[in-house]
Image 1: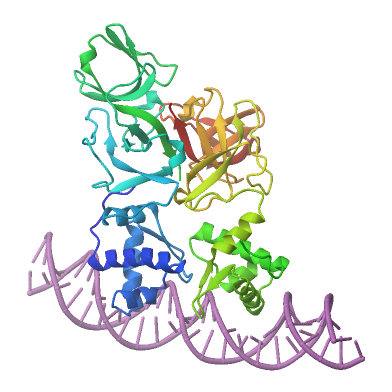
Image 2 (image 1 turned 90 degrees about the vertical axis):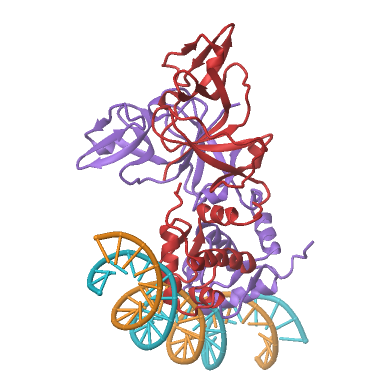
Length: 228
Length: 228
DNA sequence: TATTATAGCGAACATTCGTTCTATGTCAAA
DNA sequence: TTTGACATAGAACGAATGTTCGCTATAATA
């Protein structure tokens, strides 16, 4: 959702963290002057200025002219959890690491054998109840409209389950060695050849005669598209 | 677990509920005057008095002399959930009522002015952090492939925000009176005509010369596709 | 009836709070 | 060096906000 953006000042990180901690402790956000006192600078304008930076970075949202009108965004929370040993998500939620982008023509950044939130700049929060097992899930952001035949749009987020094998008919992220291309298709093992079927039923399948050219990168378990 | 205690006034219950809802929507508690405006009594002292009652009843906690220094207690949340038909979902989650199906050629089952979980056989659970305001959200399951030009598939779930008006470029559920057809398109108001732009960039827009033929049913805020 | 407690109303006050303006210091690029 | 962007700093203004005091109305109780 948001690139790294400009690096945050020490003070800005301190402020961001304080907003979170204050909220946890008191149940409402801090005022500008309270933040100032906490970070050792009792000067509202400095805090106001840094809050504006944080807002530009997409880490917080503000309601102008309303006291304590500060709200941590998802990105803000993700930033904090990334820079912290452990910020446990609320019960019932699961934070799925957003590991990168999926672009046709580039290999998928597949996670190493064990992977956690470490190193993920962003996470996607979902209800844990949706998935039976959340341990091997990761998320990728789709870049470009090359997967429009899979009914997947630029900016969509796909939730993947990390596996090397898929059942017939399951939608998978496939790396085609010869074409050097990544694609999302339904995979059918038909004897010696592989049929890659687009999700869009009006489009024709691709047949790969050499199964070793097909490398399964993971199984698509969910597609999420946000519209503002 | 808790005696009834002194019965709460209508107004006190209203205030309690508003504190909860305001917090959900804005991320911070309301000020006394904001509560006053919401319950139709713009007099701070009245609210202040009732807040004292609520505090004595153990339903809220307050921080004296601090703006928006109000916090719902466990008992307060329990009181709200007890006086509500639905059950309050776990913290961090929001249950969005799945109100029905969206089928081209049939009108959308639009919720009445006030709607809650009542009557919804199913709900969709999502992380509350995804949405700023969850009070007017509902979900529909897409039936058929008639909306494939919006990159929406049979079985997809669309999360809608109930509104009659959309900004230029927003994706909306539109009921076309003359065609008797429901469709999901990006809406552009271009002078006297309306342009309905499919999400699939390779498809051409539809132009409606009579805006009164276009009836906005809601705004699409999210599309979710689950794959088994 | 008189008493008491509670809810509601209005005005005023002191503090808190967000914002704006100006000024200073720092650092990197031109 | 100069320039510009940025973080910091101080002061002041105006609006928002919590609180208090006085008052009225209603209902329950002695």
